[in-house]
Image (tube, rainbow, N blue to C red; front, top):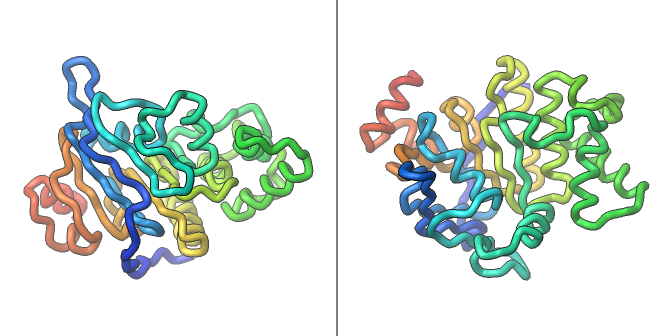
Length: 265
């Protein structure tokens, strides 16, 4: 399929995701410095910046894999407590299983490479409390099909699959419970150009059909331009510019954003 830019969505609702004043230090290194983010329902937010800018650290915090030194994180969902960073380990795990999906750059971080592909998807359902085999199998198959994964390979382990197919298994696992928020960490890095295009087409189709709110991190501005409604540019742990995708790419205001766009051109 041919990639095309989706028309910008009009955002009128309250934010689904809000991060306020988030700071994360690793020893003397400040990875995030009072970063604040809002993401609206059905929106695709792209985060760009060079290696070490803090974008992947920010995504890990959104997935509650880490805790900041300061800051507040909230999701505008029923029965979701105020500051998610204050949750204990079990409650974080359950909230992520039910409401947040993630696709990692490295499939080894998101998949059990020796288990079947359908078993990887079923694992997410098991965490959420499902125990009926027929339901696990059926929902797993539905998620794999939605990710455009070949169902004849659903019993194959990811270790026997190509990189593009591994990413589709990750995606199926991430969307199995129809999460409100989908996090994508460099989802096409290392894939051939044709495979990248196919994966992006699948992501765009899922977003369009299911209205999933997406945050995507990538160093590839082409990927961000195709996927994102709005772009946030990070440097040295700070947000230096943000705005509608077309505005940032066509008329960047910050010198660093201008440098990034010019390098892509």
